[in-house]
Image 1 (cartoon, rainbow over the protein chains, first blue to last red):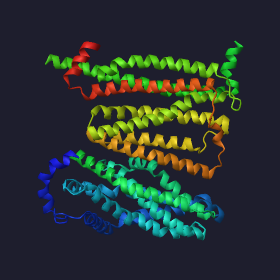
Image 2: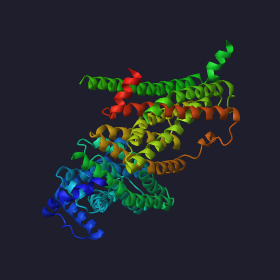
Image 3: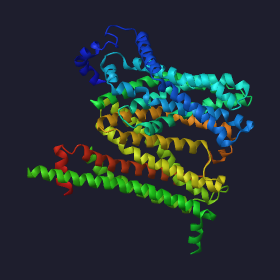
Image 4: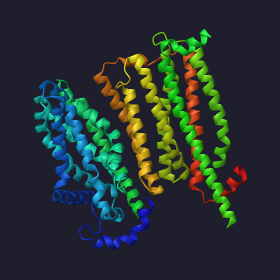
Length: 253
Length: 56
Length: 234
């Protein structure tokens, strides 16, 4: 984009003063990505809410379903894949708006844009960190909740695998929405409206995989389609995210 | 007359057929009216601006 | 561009009305009743064109968004912005008429049919686009952000459609396929094509009107706008 080139000169002085930032030398792409990954992980560990909130939300929503529908084990077992997946999806949505909001508010995001490093690489690091702090805990906790939902024992492996692939795609797809709404202060509902239609395929194949196994069918078709979606979103979304962040940052100037 | 009644009754499906046609008309007409109203509004604004400009 | 749109509009409107009248006459009066569905199938003459337009408009929106992002053509952004409400209206029409068709045929107002479901998701995409436009304050960033969203959406539409179809066949054995009409009699097909054309023209006419309004709003400082306003329409 054009404005990046125009402003690099003025702001570079500022960014090299900022100690938490890599000095502007030749940094390999992988290393750059890793740096932002580590930075965001450290920040997330420091603020407990960021990784704990989606997790709590997940647990609460899943445990509300038996209360609303009734504790019959057969009923629970049939709806378990859908309930687990929808709750995981909503928990991921809940954690989205913090993804870029902090860095936007304190100006760090602007520094990233003008730093001259490839923004889409930085973004990959950030989104991966977001996934590790919000998606991965959900995946790890899901067997426990599956137990509470009377999920058949054969289905646990696929549950974990599908959530692993699915939440990663959700992080990347959701990051597009988070980046588009970064300059809007009350963005919660808008963000869900933008992102939810895009996440439908992930939900369909994810819960489909789990219920296929739970009813004794093969899940490999679902899982490979999930993997395809993940590959697609990981490779294409960073470009859109980076573009959206540039626009958001330019809007605030 | 009975032909007209036959036509209007739509072989017993009158309610469904005519309601959906009516709803379609309302929605599409609504958006047409909305658009032309917007055009009229921005036209009068442009004219007003042009007149102010000339006064100065 | 403005003048072009101005001249074209009455022609489009005339043609559109012509097609509408002819299509409605042929569809509602001349075409015979379907032997399976009786007269209720006549909803097809608004349902199918509306569903077709809902997707066509989205593709137009995404294409002009891409043109706007790549070449910075302001008019492309206006086309995208002007298209969104029209597309949403077509989508709403397709959903409503689908439901009114479904009630006598399937016995329920709503079923999670693959096409109805993807149409519903398409409506959400339109609404999201319009909401994002409304929420961003500076016009430039609203245009660009919405353009990115439209492009992301158009990449997703085939995936969404495919997944919904797949999901649907898994959950319900194909009971609905009798609505796929591989061979339609020419007396039924002709009005359908006319109605599609009419809806298409309706869209283009409406687009012209909205784009002209947007040009007048956005370029109101340009001297030619003032000139034109005085000369033509005082």
